[in-house]
Each structure stands twice: as structure tokens, then as C-alpha cells.
Amino acid sequence: MNTILVLVLAYNIIVIGGIGKYLSWRASQQQQVTDMALGGRNAGVAMFSVTIAITYLGSAHVYGLMEMSFSLGAVALWFCFAHTILLCVICLGTGRWIRRTGTATIPELIGKLYNKKLRIYTACVAAMVVFGLVTLEAQTLGIGISAMSGWPLGWSAVIGAAIGTAYVCMGGIKQTMWVNLVNAVVMYVAVITAGIYLAYVLPDGWEGVVQHYESRDEVFKLSILSKPDLLVSFALASIFSVVFSQSVNQQGMQAAMSAKDEKTIQRSLWIAAPINGLFGVFPVLVGIAAATIPEFAQLGSKLAGAALIIKLLPTWLVVLLQAGFLGALLSTFAMSALAPATIFAKDIVGLHLKKALSPEAEKKLIRYTIITIGFVAALMTLFFHPNVILAITWLFAWLVPFFFIIVAGLFWKRSVWVAKLVLFSSWLVNLLWSFTPIKTYFGLTMLENAHIVAIVAFGLTVVGNLGVRNSQPALFAKKLKSAAFAG
Image (cartoon, rainbow, N blue to C red):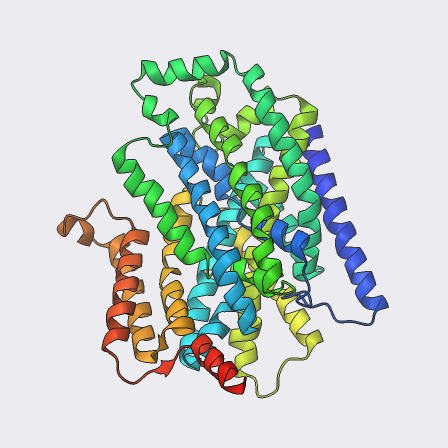
């Protein structure tokens, strides 16, 4: 085991273990049961803004962007732009709305808007999607550890998943938030320093990188505008899939549900958006540069960028950078594992019990579920290594219809029939678009899953609600009307 790996793992074990132990000790001193899911709903601006920003800095932003920019070039930055837009939507819209309802999970909110059956259906799909994200986070944790150690990717992912499970299973979301605060400082010091340093260690500098792409008539890879077909198939698909799915995904909304109040969420935008949006520049530059250097290019898109960082940057900077990268990945892994565990405890087990789970029983159930999810994700990563960003955008498409039925139910009208039509039609289209030649048959090959699912979900929501007669008033419209009458 080399020095870099030892130092990086030691840093994470000390920070994660130390904060987890301290929070457990403090809870015992105060004779409180740890609220694994929501942390007591008292997160302030600092904790919430950093957590919501780093929650969305996971596998796709670190090694996923290196992998994608290795192949597509600077157009990969649109994935970062999509997440900046996403944080605006969360902090000004969905995050505030969901905090206002007082619910603990997205399926619980859908059940409150519509009915119990829809809560169960969406719980199963949401848990499936976020579990898929956990396996991708495990893969990218493995990429980082493999680059540092030389170990096989599968076994490196197992180690990463074990650390990621520890990140959250001791103190829940509060532990994750405190660790995020520490990791955010380390991560940005490292990324800024490495970005400056990179220009001096490339064999032929950035001029050599530019010449490489010019000689191959691939200058488009150096521009975020790239080619029209890539802007539609990748850039636009990223915006559609990220904004419409992640703005109502349990993974991110769990942080919003734990915030002190709506104002905390709104004020956090000015911290969360820059922290998240600027991060992706460095991984994209690394991927673009790695593709031009034969020593790294021969390793392929998954390992080229990580290998460049290890071999070209000085040891002290690599340790700092890998600690920051691993921290970002671990944070997203932790929140991704916590999300399906919370859904399982509250929407699947808790919903079907005659007597509500006690706080202690719920804590144990969530903790054991997190451990199980981490174990299964690590096991799967031994055998499957899909393209990270393409897999993520496919998973996101499953959640796109949630956005439309939630917005309609909060502000327009609530029809169970329309909600079912939107969900099941969107899920069917997503499957057909992936596993049949239907898009080729209709000549719509330029439309990715996120495009077509968003179009179908939006169209059916509007047409269905315009045509339906028997529906309930929107949740917020009903509350506003009651408040006005009481006044």
C-alpha cells in the first residue's frame, strides 16, 4: 500500500470516525435518539448549503466528467451547468415547497398529494433509482482508490463502499453534514491549487493539448458549444434529466427536509451554487489533457484522468486532491445510501405497521439498511462498470414524471387518475426508448430518454388535468384559501 493511499484513507477515517463518535457521544449525553433521516430538522445555512452542493458533486462530477471529457471534450461541462440550474430550482422552488409540507420522503409527499398506492409505487421506483446511483458512486470510489493503489477496480470499489457506509451509518444525515463542512474546505483548496499547478506539469503545456486536437481536426472538443448534435444529445439531455429528476429526488430533498426553515434553503443558494458549479472545470481539463498524452490515453477513459493526477502532480498535492475527491464521492455515496434506507423505513416498512416505529427502532432499521445497501452495491460493482454519466442520466429519467405530478399537485389540481397516467406512461416510454428500436422507427434518434420522458410527462400532466373533472384542489392553494378565510 503506497504512501498516498495510506494518507488519504487515514484522513477520511479520522474525520469520519471522529465526527461520528462525537455526535454519538453528544446524543447519549443529551439522552437523545439519533435522528438518522432528518437530524432534527435544524440545519442552518452553512450545513445545508455545503451538503446540498456536495451531495450533487459525486461520481459524475469527479471521475465521470474525466471519463466523459476524455471522449467528448469540453461539452461535458454542460453536466455542471445543469447542476447549477438544479440548485437554483431547489433553493428557490422545490426545496422550499417540500420543507413547507413537513414530509420526510418524496413518496410520502406524493402519498399526501394523491393516495397510499401511489406512495408505494413511487417509493419502489425512487429506491431503485437511488440504489443505482449508489452502485455508480461505489464504482467511482473504486476508480480513485485503484488509481492510487494499482488494485483492481472491483476490489477498490469494495473498500470505497465500506468507507462510504461508515460516512453515514454512525450519525445519519447530521454526521454527513459535519463531515461535508470539513471536506468542502479541503476539496476547494486542493482543486484550485491543482488547477494552477496542472499548467506547469503537462509535457507540452496547454499549447500541446490544443495542437493535439487541431492536428486531428477535433477542435470542437475544446469548446463548450462543441457540435449541434452533441449539444442536443448530451447538453440538453443533461439539463432535462438533472433538473426535472433531481429537483424532486430523495437524495437531495432529504437535505432540504432537514433544513431549519424555508429561508435557510433560499439563502443557501449564494453558497451552494458557486461551490457546486465551479468544481467541474478541473476534472474536465484533466480528461481533455489525459486524452492527448499516450501514456495515459492507453489506459482508457475510466482510468486515464485519475492516472494523470497521480503521476504528474507532486505527492503532497495528490494527497490533498484525492482526499477532497474522495470526500465529495463519499458524501454523495452516503446521501445516496441514506435516501433508499429512509424510504424503506418510512414508506415501505413504517407505512404497513399498525403501530409506528419508535425512534430507536427506526434508527436501527435505517442503519442496518444502509449497511445492506453498501454491501450489495460493492458486490455489484465487482462485476459491472457502466459509463457513469450515461448511466446516471438514464436513471434520472425514471424520476422526471415525479416533478410534474408534484408541481401540479402543489399548485394546480390533484387527480389520482392523471398522476397514475403520467407515471406509468413515462416509465413505459423510458423502457421502450432504451430496449426497443422505437426512436429509430419514428426518426427521433436525436431525443434521449430524458427528452422524451419530460415531453410525455409534461404533455400528459397538462392535457390530463385540463380534461379531468373530478379532482381535488392543489395542496398549497387549499392552504392559502384556508389562511385567507381564517384571516
